[in-house]
Length: 332
Image (cartoon, rainbow, N blue to C red; front, side, top):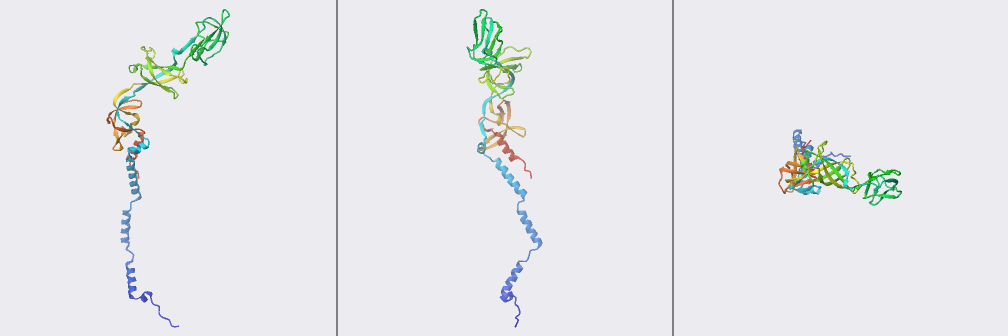
């Protein structure tokens, strides 16, 4: 069998194609290590590192927090108020005690001496005017009734069946507790600040019971032992919550009118200085203020604000929290 020598396919394609392929192969020679390293270095420098990217993202988020509008905060529950003149509710606390209203206490005694035949009411019972409290037998063997003179509660009783009673001894004490007195001890160092007609907030010791009333009487005399004067506040007591003998705290309200007053809750602290957040150009900005007299719920501002400015009032702490986030240093 005749064998023909093998020919390279490039040779069979002709010198033109072989030259073309050879040229392409020459063009595709691998680059030198030095040139490749430079290319990788340039590519790496062009890409942001994870820490830089995270920092850029954090700064963007902080900027967004600081850029919340007043309307955004209002949607979150922040309520604004307008600065201007008003009253600062100055107050001071004094001790007091609940007592029965002596003008509504009835001491019931028999008109004639006699022997107690029957007792129908006892201590703690509620009575109406005209209710029979006891039956008395007189010395001539006739009987008569002891009746309640007012609506109220039996506070005390000194009568038992078979006992002799006389007109000079009260058999029952009935008190109408629908109103009570709060007797407040006024120290002499604040006596000049207390006057009839002032509002007093009364809070029961050890409970949540509280009420407001006015001072109806101020004693002109000081107790020689305690060096205090008594002030009286009359409180309604429809449900009996104010029990005689209960100790209370009485906050005497002594308001004063000032040029600029704001709610106390609007004041926040930044870098140990009082500030408020003023609505300006649709955003809140902190402003340092100087406080004057401080009341229970309102404060005087003597520098830093003018009348008519709008400030964050209720939930102003939300504004402080967001602005503090924006000002916080980055940690990476």
